Length: 251
Image (cartoon, rainbow, N blue to C red):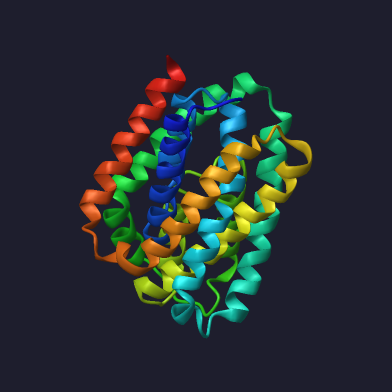
């Protein structure tokens, strides 16, 4: 579809915000996805184009946290396999299920994502109190990452929040190293789904370009300065955008 200069600017700006937020907490798709709906992209096209476009932002986010990735190579190789398998399975489900199912499922996923954003600190505290540390997280973490990958391949909003909760609960690591691992696993999920979508899904490449340019810049900024922003402010903004997305999808 054709977009006006103002609409293109809005999608680009949403990409910047999503890249920055993904580098810090995740849930950037709750900004780009509803923005693309607002300018007229169909839901499935918006979802797959958004997924492909956010890959460059994931790369810059990972590079910004590369110091915190040191010493996690073996762990992330194991978990990365789960992320890729899950992502491909979720992407296939997205393309096989009817479009009507997406319109029903996604508002529910966005609502759950918003709740995760709001209650993330309490959830992490509850899980951390019951944590049994394992160098690689054990089989339950692997299965959890597999499920998060399926969720990310189908609809990626808040997969970063889910991953932070899982990794923070099963690994004996500080939050910055957990966030670095989250960024890499999210990138693997988005990249695997993007490769799948590029060949067999209705991708709008203009939208991809706008989101890609914005998310690359945002990922760099998020890794540098985003961690200084108050977490409650970020959570509040994400929830407001998520509510707008739900209203748009149900209208």
